[in-house]
Length: 306
Image (tube, rainbow, N blue to C red):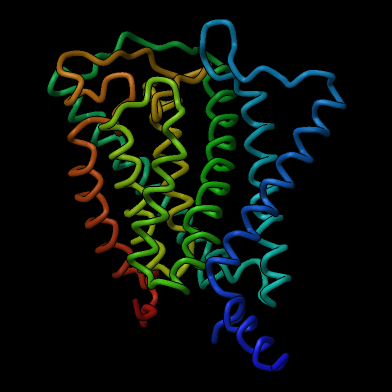
């Protein structure tokens, strides 16, 4: 009798691929929350009060943002490593491996910058985005360009490792790649709901971007193409063109700009990615990027079955 119950219990917790996906995700969530709480307590004990992320003008401060995103990236990778140890896999098995990662990352950097620039150009040409001049001069241009590039690289690493890394990989093991992509993209969108200035159109754009990043993962076999694209997409909005990024404005941006006209066209307080032009531009840019990278041999030859 005990053997039968033991067999049933094993079936509940383990499948043909090891720990069932639902339990793995629960453990991952608990590990990540525990690490986040421990880190928050350590910061509070060290400085006696949490540092402020918002500077007096209502903009995100680069120094504290950089520290917080570096900490989050480390904690997400640490939680993934713990799950890898539990599941008997290396940490890079969750999308951080693959062939030619440097080339994919650099291609992603170029793709994100070009796609966002095309979107901003279309908004400016239509009168939905107005530039008011430069906000930075001299050495400040280089200083903030590098700080924000590093900061958004860390954002891309933590978000891609979390949503398209462990979450996507584990869900796909349970329900298939594209159903998992839908779930992870909606979770990705939900994670941006609390951003000040975010809008329904902006959240829709975030969900669509999540699906795009899943497609890049599917085609390239790793997260590095998406990490590069994610980095410069955010960097160009936040630093280069001085627009809101998912409803957030950042201190130390190169250009002064403001949205004009219909908010559905301009993106309003959400930024360019909240514009109804955002998805078509991203899709067109993605198709061009796919064509170029296919010719460069940066895609996997035999994608996994859905």
